[in-house]
Length: 112
Image (cartoon, rainbow, N blue to C red; front, side, top):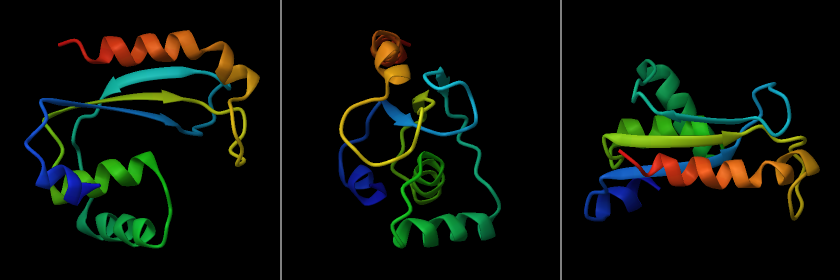
């Protein structure tokens, strides 16, 4: 993704939406502006290694793209706590009930 972002005309803002298990109540929606803070170089390298081996993680995406460039100055994130992290189609009931709130969080994240 970092290469793709660097090869395009720059975006003013990027809104990322992800299901991220952080131990919250399933269906919890959090919206924030990423502060761009990067870990020490050794941790960045670890995250690059994870990404190369197929680990899919919002945190890794932010760190790797932040370290290698391509992200705009304004990165907004909408996270929803999954009820489970198994593969499959559709959403859990806890997430499905929160879809209107998730959509609203995405739309309001596009505002200045």
